[in-house]
Image (cartoon, rainbow, N blue to C red; front, side, top):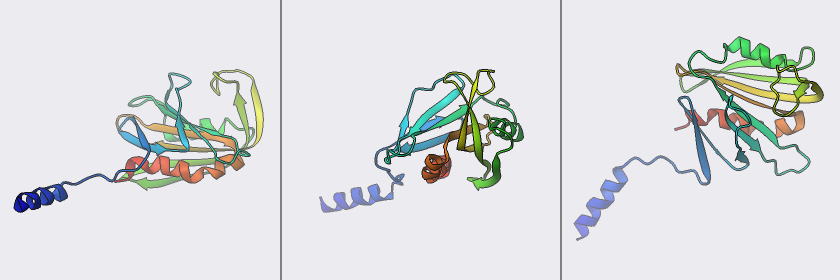
Length: 182
C-alpha cells in the first residue's frame, strides 16, 4: 500500500501544473489571452467594434474609474500601426505631448503610446470620428498598445484624467503583458 501511495505521489509531482492565480479571469482576443482580476471589472462592450471592455475601479474615490477598451478587426483590419497612432493623437486638441515605443514581449514587438493633453471626448455611443460634438477634457492621458498578430492586430486603449490614468499605469502594463506570462 505504501509503495502505491509513493508511486501516485511521484506521478502527481511529475505533472506540470500552471501556476494558479487567485481570483483571476481571462478574455481571449485573437491569439492573446489576457488575464485580469480586481480592480478590473469586465463590462458589456458598448459597441460591436469592441472585443472587450473593462473598468478599472480605483479604491481611491478621489480618482476617476477608467475604461480600458480592446479592439479587434481580424486579419488586415484596423489599419496599420502608424495610422492608429496618428488617429489616436488626432483625438487630442493640437499636438499632445506623446511618446511611442516598441517593447519586445513573447517574441512580438508591441507598440505602446502615451499621450497627454486636452482630449476631445465625444458623447457616449458616438465614435471619436463620428462628427458628433466634442467636449475638451484638459489634463487627460491616453495609454494605448498594439499587439501584432497574423490573425489581426489587437488594439488596446485607456483614456482618462491624467492623475487617474497614472495611478493605474502598472495595472495597464500588467494587462498588456499578461498574454506573454508563463
